[in-house]
Structures are given as C-alpha cells and as structure tokens.
Length: 84
Image (tube, rainbow, N blue to C red; front, side, top):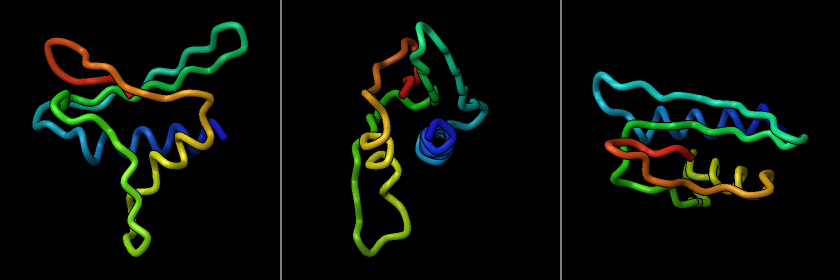
C-alpha cells in the first residue's frame, strides 16, 4: 500500500508541480509506527484536489491516496512550493 501512495504522490508532484530548474522531493518518515509520505513540489499556487474523470486516463490518483491513507493534505511552504 505504501508503494502505491509513494507512486501517486510523486507522479502528481512531477506532473502538476513542475517548475523549470526545480525538482520534486520525496520524504519518508517513520515515527511510532506511522509512516509519513511527503512529496514536495515547486508550485505553491495550486493545491491538489481529487478530480475524477470517468472517461479520462488520469485524475484518480488523489482518490486512491484519500482512500488508502489515514489522512492527507497539503500546506504552503514558503517561499515557494508545497508538500503533499
């Protein structure tokens, strides 16, 4: 399950958070038996929203994240970017 969450979050960060000359960052933290998976992207102006498209080939990643994770969200990271 963790590998699917990692895949979806990093795919979203690289696809939707691209800024020329910047890279996405993945951080995994294990504390008291809880794994925190955090993909940080360069764009801070748009926040992720699950947008399913029944006929589309994409748009289901955050729905998977929401259904598999105990909790998920994002917060602005100044001066730029955001961790999801």
